[in-house]
Amino acid sequence: MKYMIEPDWLREHLNDPNLIVLDASYPQVGGEKSSFEDHQILGARIFEIDYFSDQSNPLPHMLAPSDEFQEKARNLGIYKNSHLIIYDNLGIYSSPRAWWMFKAMGHDNVSVLNGGLPGWIEKRYPVEKKMEREIFSGDFVANFQSQLVKSIKEVKRNLETKTFQVIDARSKGRFDGSLPEPRPRLSSGHMPHSVNVPFEEVLEKGRLKSEEELKKMFSHVDTSMPLTFSCGSGLTACITLMAADQVLDNEKSVYDGSWVEWASKGEVIIK
Image 1 (cartoon, rainbow, N blue to C red):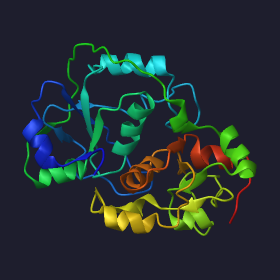
Image 2 (cartoon, rainbow, N blue to C red):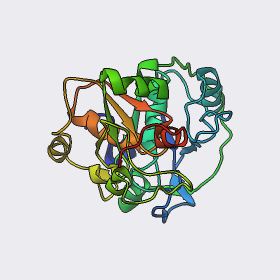
Image 3 (cartoon, rainbow, N blue to C red):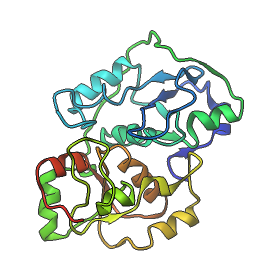
């Protein structure tokens, strides 16, 4: 699978000179809690999604300006030639968001560990207590890829132009308005003309489903136009995007403000 690596491969290459392992674990909103919160893969560095996001934006997880992202990535010891392996402690949850953040900053040499920390531990591969490390600064260069990100203005315009398809990664209940949003005072429902591919349904036991299964899940998607992925706050949208990227060649982007921005601004909601 594209952008996915297996625990066996990582164990074999763990000491490669340009390889950097990043722990991008993030607590699941209203969901399960990891059994491995205090552990990390041997030698991993901690990638805090909120720290690498736009600190001045009231919306959660929004991409930081490229110069800020670059400085923080350099402080984490990341270089232009680094091969980044990203994982999280829930299998696959927040790691695709970190993967996409680096892609949006122009760093293509980045992969996600299929099965994450649980899959690594299941293999009895080496772990250690979670820790911060002293790291030499890197020379990472951020080159923002604007085509990978959609703003609310672009998504609103698309209601008329219909130049791209919006895929919503939230649960079916939140999408159709039958279940509440986990964030208080936020209406459930969905954007007009969007389609629902819940992120939970592209996963099985913390891993991406097979390409054959994913093809069936995206069989109703229009392959003639670009795809823009949305969710509650832009995090799990990246799971469904990564799954789609295994089987569809469409151009793909993320609506970074996602449902938090759309619903809080009083935009058109379908239930």
